[in-house]
Image (cartoon, rainbow, N blue to C red; front, side, top):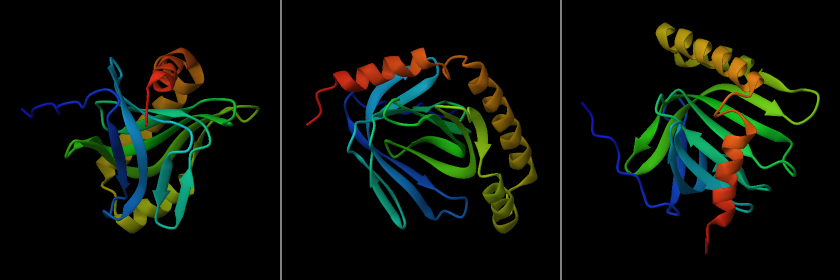
Amino acid sequence: MSTPPVRPVVGTRLVFRWRKWDDSPHWVHECVYLGSDEWGDWFGQPTGWRSSRPGRDLLTTAPNVTLLPPTGDYVMTVNQVPPAKTRIYIDIAWDAKWQDHEPTGIDMDLDVIRSVGERGVWVDDRDEWDDHRAAYGYPLDIVDHLEAVTDELERRVTASVAPFDDATADAWLARLAGLQLS
């Protein structure tokens, strides 16, 4: 049985590191540890903190909070709206976990998104998923599992059940706003 990771003190700055299936680097997000609840561990990014990947570097334009659930098969980011136009952005993941005292995961292409406005909830990057399944040779059991996870997350986000409701994320956004970060 593995030992659960030791959680940092609330307010500790961290880096959330993503990679792709072939172990190539992907997104890196500056973040701060906010704490945990029944859904998993929460991280935050105040406005102006950096997110980068090879070929792209940006500063956040709105505060956001990110949930790392214990299942390790998705990571959810919730943006403050307004000003953001995307409320929920869920990265379907593999092996998302604590590693060497920081959160990390493998981005598995598919994303469940809830935007503000008419578009609502949808699954993005199915074309990338199809291309990478062939190029990287994703194992069939992982493909089946993550497709089922994606379908279930799309249903749960549409239904706005916790933690995919506004109240859960808003409490964590309030905690982020209350931190004295230098």
